[in-house]
Length: 407
Ligand SMILES: Cc1cc2nc3c(=O)[nH]c(=O)nc-3n(C[C@H](O)[C@H](O)[C@H](O)COP(=O)(O)O)c2cc1C
Ligand SMILES: [Fe+2]
Ligand SMILES: [Fe+2]
Image (cartoon, protein in one colour):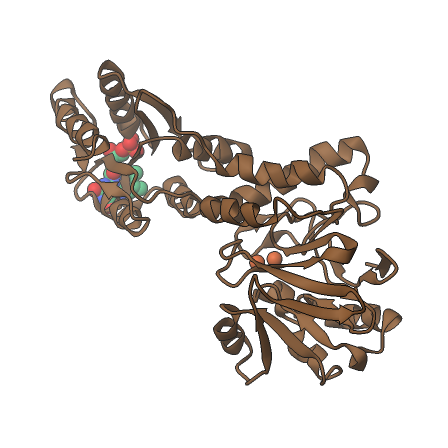
């Protein structure tokens, strides 16, 4: 990425990683990503975040275009994940006098990431660091967006808010670095979808923390949002911020209780159980959403089910047992549920098996780890369900309803 002058004193010195296909072995990427880093030049020279170490050479060339690196006074590390902090030690070799600015929570993280003793300036919401005549930086701690150490940096005189991963998107713009430089089509179809996916996968789990951070920044004057991935946001700023809060408040459904049932099934036995349980719940006045989890689930199928789960009072998981474990689609699905707040929701496990329902025990273990409120007994049927075998669904449903009602 070429160096771009953002204002008289601020430069973008980050890099692009357009061919990255998966981020953190977690998120498939359709448009690669960028690692954004910003230099504020002036009486004091401040670098905000670095880039992934693999890109240090390019980053260093960028920096040298605008500053002699030894003249950097401060390096702000807004978050310790190595996609942003990774070049810190390499850079310090050329900027030995630079002071490192971090949040209070970050000290231990940085110490354990770099395993050497570094000298920090620890800041919080009350800190203001003067960087010139009438110019200063303020900090906004934003814990859990998405690590405990995350903070934002506010440059009031330029109305710029640097937000690290928050408001980011894994998106390499086709041209330029600003959101407003995109065509309407690229903006809506490509970039904005990635902005939403980023929220869903990285931030949704911490939605209460998102709201807390929003309350701290909502009255700031902001002309530019400068996240650490994707374009600099100079269009619809208020909308981008509001989306984060809108997505974070999922209004509870008043009235009826709701249960989401997910299942995978090879020969349809577990599926029969799922639909029988669904009909019993419906008869008892409970709203239901039932979804088969297929072998390869698309992002949009996944996010539809996840949306239903996040507004449900309870979730039921069905799988048969194969080779002493759970069916692969349910394994994958359970992994992705790590991005949803499940704590306290009621849960139950059911499925068909042949000789030992070990798959169901694995699901229970994972749900316990997610702090779901598991009903006592799993509901299992040997091989193919019959009307007789399905009678036990009644007890299972009773237990689930009692659990949703606070038992
Ligand atoms: C390849 C394969 C491996 C299996 N492994 C186990 C097992 O380890 N333990 C068990 O109790 N049942 C095992 N079964 C039996 C299934 O759990 C049983 O056929 C079940 O009824 C399938 O339900 P479904 O139609 O909902 O998938 C296995 C079945 C298959 C096809
Ligand atoms: Fe991160
Ligand atoms: Fe990141």
